[in-house]
Amino acid sequence: MKRVTIGLLTLSLIISGISTASAHTVLISANPGKGSMIKVLPAKITLKFGDPLLTLGKQAINKVTVTDPDNFLVTTGVGYVKGRVLTAFLVNATPITGTYKVSYRVASQDGHIVTGSFTFKLQN
Ligand SMILES: [Cu+2]
Image (cartoon, rainbow, N blue to C red):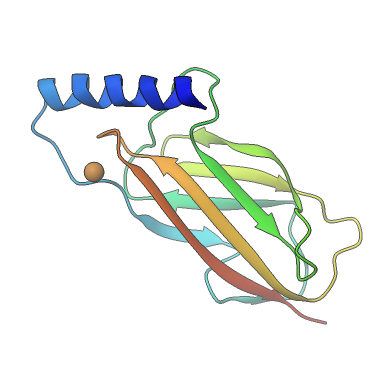
């Protein structure tokens, strides 16, 4: 964890040195969406951000997790990035109905860490 932090700091210094850009990124949309009511828990969750996320090789600096109404983690792994989209797979074998909480922590191109959370509901 410490190494990631130092790496990010270094990287953000480098980036701020070479470009005058830009505000950190924001969550644009998600599937399942913020506050949505769904009937079937999908196989994955996707979050779309305003800008491509920063990646550092295979280091897990971008992360999304989902917990079910019993507060059990239902995401597997930390997720993977493709440009502006962060995806994580969900364990959906025996989903329970109720409120699911999504939490994310991502790295902007400017090196800033952006965090947030929202919920969606699984209903019968
Ligand atoms: Cu920023």
